[in-house]
Image 1 (cartoon, rainbow, N blue to C red):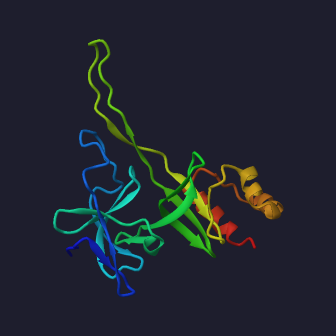
Image 2: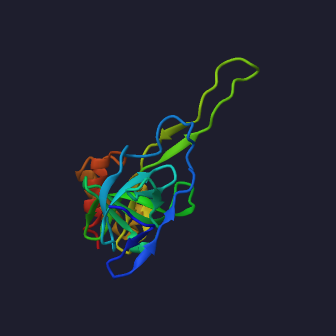
Image 3: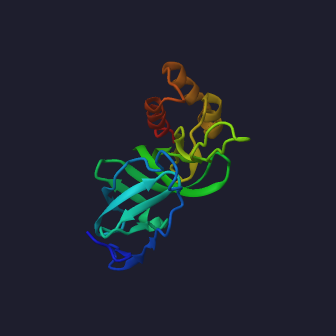
Length: 210
């Protein structure tokens, strides 16, 4: 469908969309800032229409195709904090502290939610600057989008979002009153704090802690 710069909300109102003017990305760069190459139909929380979206992992923006050659940006507002792609992938807009311990508001993929505890995956793309030849030698290297390793976070029952613990000690520090239960569980289950499937299992266990 075509949008006229607004999206209609389920409460009968509407919300203005900011048009993507120019590009935050570098047109000369190789690679891509996007996780998926094409726009995908999606349901957005509190929005009536099904809308074409594409996540830009470099700018951390959810882009919207209005069907008429214009690209808009979904407002980073709590009303629109869940984007469910037709493929089944769910993006959540959350407040968190990034790897540099700086407060941020951005999109993460919901991997699992059990009893109010959610495992989230942050997809990241950086832009590596161009390199000019030195002293007339060598060749020019254009800027390049580079996909980074994913970062994982936990959304706890109080809705706070924290980095997924790197090891047993960090996990026990996060849940000090449950340190003994955590120790017993990890003794009985050989799990890695780096493998996504094991992080899902750990999240399921954490959801059982009161």
